[in-house]
Each structure stands twice: as C-alpha cells, then as structure tokens.
Amino acid sequence: MRLGWTHTVLALGLAVCLAMLAPGAQAQDRVWVQIEAHPDLATAEARVRAYSRLIQNVNGFRLASGWYGVTLGPFDSATANQQLTSLRNQGLIPRDSYIELGTIYRQQFWPVGANTLAADPVVTATPVETAEPVAPVTPIPPPDETVSEARQSERTLDRPAREALQIALQWFGFYNSGIDGAFGPGTRRAMTDWQTAEGLEPTGILTTRQRAALLDDYAGELAALGMEPVRDTRAGIEINLPMAMVQFDRYDYPFTHYSSRDGSGVQVLLISQSGTRATLAGLYEIMQTLEIVPLEGERARQNDSFVLTGQSAALRSHTFARHEDGAVKGFALIWTPERDEQMARVLPMMEESFTLLDGTLDPGATDPDAAQSVDLVAGLDIRRPTISRSGFYVDAQGSVVTTTEVLGQCTRLLIDDVHEAEITYRNDDLGLAVLRPQATLAPISYAAFATRAPRLRSDIAVAGFPFDGALNTASLSFGTLADLQGLNGEDTVQRLDISATDSEAGGPVFDPTGAVVGMVLPSAMEGRALPDGVSFALRADRLGPVLAEAGITPEPAANAQALGRETLARLGANMTVLVSCWN
Image 1: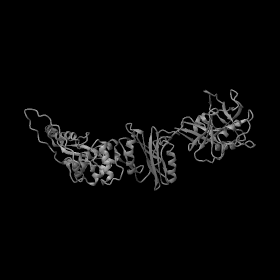
Image 2: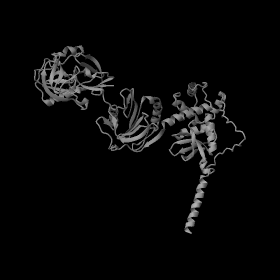
Image 3: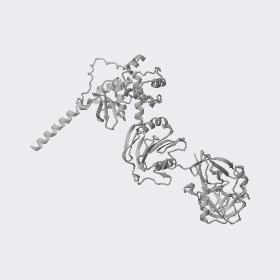
Image 4: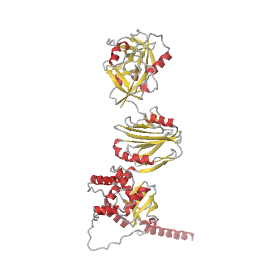
C-alpha cells in the first residue's frame, strides 16, 4: 500500500511539471521588450513618457540592480519578436533592445498605479495560412513631421520631457545654459546646431522622431559610462560614479580606491579623513607630489576647499576637497587623454552628486598586505624627477650655483622640490650653471668663497644630497684635498680624496673654516667613471670672473678659525639645496 501511494504522488507531480512546461503555459509565455535602463528615476520617467507618446504598451519598472528600466509589454513570445523587429526597423527603439522574461523587474512606476507583471500578455491573432507563401512586408517608417506638426507635438511635452531634451543637448555639447524646460533662444539654437550636425534640416524644432533619436543617443552614452550612485558609509560619501569604467579596489587611508575596469584608463579616489583647515592644507601639498596630479594644470586653494587639475601627454586628473564639520572629504578623477570628451561629461555629474554623509574613513582602513615604499603615499606613486643634483646659494636673493648635468631637457626646474627656477647663466666648458628662483628667496646662509687655493692634503668637506634627494636635508662627507689640478693638468679643477654620489654633484666643497673652495663635479668625466674614493671639483679661486659674467659678485670669506663638525654640518645644510629636473 505504501509503495502504491508513493507511485501515485510521483505520477501526480510529474503531470504537474509537464503541464507547467507545456508550450501554451501562460507563465512561460509572458515576456517584455527591454529597451532602456537609467540609473536615476527622473531620467527614466522622462524617457518612459516620451516613448508612451509614440508606442503602445510602454511600462517603467525598478530593476533588481537598482536602475530603472523602460519596457514594452507584456506580450506572448511571437508578438514580442514581431514588435521588436518592427519597432527596430522604424527606428523607434534602440538597436540593442532585447526580449526579457521579466525576472529583473520589481516595482512598477509607469503607468502610475498599474501592475502589468500580472497582466495577460498582448497576443496577436494567428495568421491564416495560405496555399502560397506571402512575401514579408518591410515596415514603412511613418512620415516625418512638418515644422508645424513638430511644433504641435512639442506642445504636448511636459516639463520633465523638455528638461530631458535640454540635458541630452547639453551632454553632446550643443547647449550650455540652465536646465529649466523652457525652449528659449538658447535651446532653439542648440536644436538647430544638433540638426545641422546630424545632416538634418536646421529648423530649430525637433520632430518626434528626432527627439527620440537624440534621447536614444543620450541613453546609449549613459549606458556606456554606467553612471550610478555609490554610497560609501565607511568614508561618509555618496556620489555618482562611472561604474562601467571603474570598480572598487581597496581602502587605503585616507582614500577609497576605484581602479580601472577593463582597461578603461579611468580611476577614482574618494577622500575622507577627520581634520581641520590645516589638514586640508597638508592634503593640498601632498596631492601635488603624486604621479596622478601632473605638474601642468590650474590650482585653486581657498580657506575651506581646493581644486587641483593636472594634465600631461599621458594623464589627466581633477581633484576636489573641502573642510566641513571637522572632516576633509573630496574626490579625484583620473583618466587618459582619449577619455577627455567622456570625462568632460562625467565630472559635472560627479560634482553635482557629491554628498557628505556622517563619518570619516578610519585611519586603520588599510590593506595590511598592500605594498609599502617610501615612494608610495596611501598606495599611490610619488612623482619623481627625471634627474636630481645638488646646488648651493651664492647670494642673499637665493641665486643657486649647480652643475649643468641637472639641466638636461627639463620642462621645469625646482629648488628643493618647491621653488620654480630659471637658468640665468651656463658655462658648458666648466659644467657650471646659475639658477634664479622665480620668487625671491631669503636663504639662511649663502656661500662665502675662499680667495686662494687651499693647501694640499688639507681637510675638506662636501655637502650634498645623496640617494637622489631621499633625505630631507643635505648631508656632509669628509675627506682631503688630493691635488690642485685635474688629471690632464687643468688648473680649474681639483682632485678630492672622497667618494661623492651622482646626486651630490653641484654641491659645495668647504675648508675647515666654512669657506667654499669648490663645487663638486659629476663622477663621470669624458665618458669614464671615477674609481671609489676619487672626486673632482671646480676651484673656487678660479670662479670669480665666471660668476661676474652671471651678474653675481662672490662674497669673499673672512679669515676665521676652524669650525667644529657640527657647526660645519649646519652651515652645509642651510646653504645646500636639491636641484631637480622635471618632465
């Protein structure tokens, strides 16, 4: 008995399943034509209204993804395919429209109060079969409107539909005024320009079909960017981001990193930290040291906010931050030049949507496995110069003497990585250059030159920046004077028993009294590298006429007693600068 009952239950269950899978089952034959999706409700409502004036059975649903979809239906499968083909051919729906089962649809927002998810599908009558096959009929697009008809159809548009057209015209660069839904001279001019660009008669009044085409193109652009709201509760920021181009990567205080998606070349940083105006000022300085902020670009800093823009041949960036209620928050958008046009549209959308929420990023919000380096700040590369050498102040106005080796093919010369400088004199025979800061500086100390050559085998000290300026201040190395001439008998150079690194070239050479007796030359001379423990320097007693040509009167050193090493090191640190070449 029990076995028979089990067979009966299985048989009934199988019969039910077969019935559900039958071709005529209504649950399996209710489908929609999915034509558009938008990240915000306002745009979706404007689009669904526009379509409803042209096409029947238009619906609007909130999608499972959080976006808002514009659909047609419900239909049975045959009708849906017929509608898809016909409306595509007429140019009334996008070419990438497709059949959707409806599993992605949630609440319906159009028509208001409707629930077509449970409605019976629209079914076309079964065609009567004939003995001879009937040739397919190519749908004929409806005739376009006259100017009078276009004006008449335009009058039926409500304000959101008018604003949607202005937004689309603005997106494509034809309209640059306010979004107010009023079709004044500016909007008419934009419509005329759009028609001209599309090869249409420039009437300044869009026909129904032209309006649909414009909005379709705009929808396609938005879909390519994937603009959607991102709510980061850890950082306390809400903002619209181009999620088709970026993806969440990691937290690395004070940044939330969104890396490039599918090689788009676009990156986003969300900035969030507790702080004061001083914190904001510090962030302003730090951001300018990063590779993501190229040197060329506008900088605007106010008490409670700043904007940094940067551009180079390979990179663009826009950084905004502001101080408010004990927090410093903002964002940075970084992209490659081929994305200029798209980012010109994305950036205003990010700025307009940027909203502060409660809370800031925790200082401990950092991936413990993330790479660490002195060349990284919160996982971002610090910008490094093409070449760095040493130099030293030679007058009270901040003029600097350095080696010509640092000049190269620089687009910018900086003193101590901060002060812009220009070349006022160079002598390639001696390998000496004079730089003048664009803003007047007041150095703590500047060179006092020895008026005669030091004695052989006397003690000397070299001040400079080894390790390409990795240290914040100049360091001092000690050695002796080995010879008063070069290897070929040159009386303008002297040989030192000391090892100087490449980036110490251009630094001053001191005698024990603190008088400058020379300038360190590069370690490679005439294509040959010097052995360890050997360096060369220009002789200070031969530099008087050279500096005079540069408009500098050398300060002579007064007779003085020998300085202690600590005092000499302080003098060298105050006088010596890092000279860097940037491209």
